[in-house]
Length: 594
Picture (tube, rainbow, N blue to C red):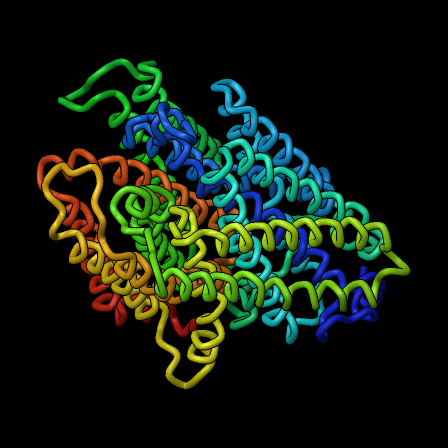
């Protein structure tokens, strides 16, 4: 394995092994397809049946109930996909399986029938489970013994994530809104296929890296608890051996998982198809509420029983992780409104029409936003060609064809936009702002975290939640003039742009921090379990986002749209201040880990 890693580092691009950039482009195409399709979901499901580009005209509550379940499951299947790769397939084969299944999912959705739509969502959920955890595991394996370069590798990889999201939302959204929904769904699948093919054909570059099943704990995680205190490592090991998972633990895991999944599927089925899988009531609560509350209680019992078996220092640190996990639920419940209510706000309540000089200025800015990043990424592609064409020439040809396709689409889109007298901004265009702001702001935040002014974890969480709330505060202010119950309006787009800016700043404070601290605070043999809990926290936040976003019509009719956004203002800000106030307590619980 060490020989394979050394061989990878012989062919370098921008100071990193060429294999990293194969992963970069694979992730870029996967994120292109993922975000390109994701931004279309709520627009397609709620678009009028009678229109130039007919959708399904679902009520917003129904659409967001389905989207919430879909988004939630995307963070649960990676737990299974990572386990399968560890035990059976290896990381590289798992990535290929995931890409293939997702390609079939996009193809199914492009047919636009009810059956193929649901089949497509199911395939995307399963495919993401194989892809998401295992491509990053390959990077971890590549950089064993090269820890000093790992942070830079993940930074480059993160750029691939955001480049794919940027172009996916822009181009899939453009085709879907201006030509037809199936074009947008289909385009996502085409580039997913290109990503899979170029990765599969580059297998010779990696040797045995990612090819053989490995034990879960061989995947390196930054600075775990053992690296800080060898003495503590021995105690942790003994503590864990004395307290393995019991039959009672597995029963709690199984029952709570079944309850949670039953709720996830029942919520959209009951609303959309009028099929209730839990047709009973108890104490004034419907069956669905009873099941999910019971599942949460059982899961808390499991967590408390596991934590109590560790020595005090380890127990304190796991409690700190659990608290951060709770804050993560609140963050994503609000942040993921970008998938639902904020996209609806862009389409139905935002003035997207530009005329005269403002239209031309926007077209020029939009053209620069599109072409400059694409030129930079094409230059990286050229560097990869120079280093690896003799070894993985066919993979490079496939990748080059994909980029030719992207350039053709970008030029076609720009020519279409510049040929119009005025300009109407696509509703899906606003989704690219998050990726754009991440790319431009991430270096500044990275330097901040590396300086002597680096805040503690609780302060970062607090700042992230407060910035998120302030973004919704801008939307609450901007919508104050919209009448109660109004379905459309014409609010200035500046409010939405500023909201995305603040939300992205909040994300940069909080999102990259969570997994890093988890890996530092949790004992090695509990890493897999706690990563599962972390994904569960995000999954709960995703489902909560769909449920709460689905209340947009009800709250707007009873109060106003401004009150709807005000709720998302006050709750994150309140939780953010709680995090800041808990800073001394959390520092004590973390026992010196920074």
